[in-house]
Amino acid sequence: MKLPKTPSLSIGDRTTRAAIWVLGACALVWLMQMAQQILLPAVFALVVGVVFAPLADRIDRLGASRVVCSIAVMFLVLATLSAGILIFYPVASEFASRLPLMWIELQDALVGLKSTMESVEDVQNEVAETLNNGEESEDPAAAVELPTVGVLIAYLPAVGAQIMVFVGILYFFLLTRADLYEFVAKMNNAISYRALCKAEGEVSHYFFTVTTINGSFGALVALMLMILGMPNAVYWGFAAFLVNFVLYLGPIFFAFTLLIAGLIVFDGPLTMAPAALYLSMNMIEGQFVTPSLVGHQMSVNPLLVFISLVFFLWLWGPLGGIIAIPFLVWARQVNRALAAGEPEERKIIEDSSRSA
Image (cartoon, rainbow, N blue to C red; front, top):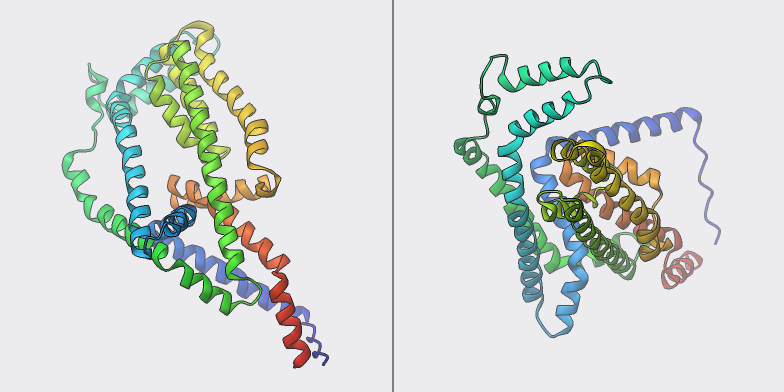
């Protein structure tokens, strides 16, 4: 039985439909930004759940129940995040406390470039006025106020609520994701439960491969900076490991930070050495190591990666930049499944259309 042809839309109908889609997209972006305190931990929990779902399946094969698998993976994720925070917190705290002194040292380092940069003195005066809030002080470091304990305590309820949202959605997603995938497959015949599980496995493989690469890269960066004589080289390596998850923008920001640190720590030609060394290593890793280990099947258009990073960074900040790439990889795998379809499903759809 031949299906009736769908009538073609007029130009006015197409314009109306396009306008509705644009307005819907704008409304969705506005909602995502306004509901950031809820949606950010929720989406982050879903992304983390997709990444660690294959691990839950392996535990399930050992004979454990879904509840045990979900709790085990959830505690593993929380322990990993807590360990990362505990490792990185000392260097972040020290950096915050030393920030005023670093500005002063940076000013002293820029004095040597005064012959070639006539505007440095004006920049120095502006920085000094900013640090001192327009008032003169013999100790500029004392003029910069750090967050007090009361300010930090005021943020605890909001942070605690976001942690609860993250933990709850992560646990229930791991517990009920099989039922959720089956529901999605029933609602849309173009994609199957197996395709969703395959996309899940591809994202997990991509994430753990990239994590291994970034970990090795961070260790190598720490080693090379240690050879150069850079203070706190281990912490710099750990920071290189973290920022490498935010493609393009993360390495650029980190190289700029290393450039400032080089101006403060070293003198002469060595001032550029940390940033130049890091950029060289990052280019080798990005052009040769990652593509060879990740593979062509998991590669994503660089323009889509950059747009996704900029959008999520603007929308949700640094955590959004971490979410962007796994979400984009998952969407690409699901789109491939939708475009290709499963052979069994195609046969079922064709048979149902013929019988109709």
